Image (cartoon, rainbow, N blue to C red):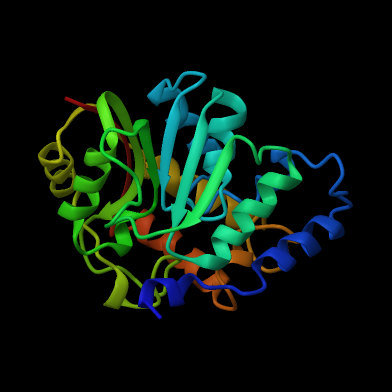
Length: 271
């Protein structure tokens, strides 16, 4: 099994989400995307960041979008429900793809979201197939960033937008474990400038970017203080991270506050 896939694999993730919803008194009949928000946005600042990035991108109804590294599909469902897009999500982890597919069925978005197991370095799509592309917290696990961004550039039409929100290298060594890696073996952090250079080489022009590290650090601090994340919460990101979830989340907060990692949102256009 691929080391990255092994890191993220959670055979009981769908059952855990179902149980968490039941504990919160949520019936699967009439379930909404808002009900899923605490667990289906596997990235810093959760749904808040997704809403923010989608507004930056300005995706329009009827667009066909790629979500590379879709996780359990929260971002894809937001883009489908709020922005009227049809979203194709791919992820290396079968457990996440299974959960993404089922969660979309539960909220009635199965016709607007399609999920498949695939490798972002070898996308199973044709050239210029998508009106735009999207990634949130994906490239940290990818060593070959040139190939990753090149594949996104290949499948996006000229004039299409690529929206990304990622964790990048800061100053100093990262404190492990973190959600994307238990140690440095599968953590491949680049600086924002290094990533931007790869994006440009893939045929894009960066038209907007913002360092949101301070916002990310404040969000984590508040969430930990209010006990909004962690094993005692029925429905949360800990369900996607296993037994060391609390330690991982605490290390992200520390890494952000100490400047060891940075979070950046950006929009690029295919030229």
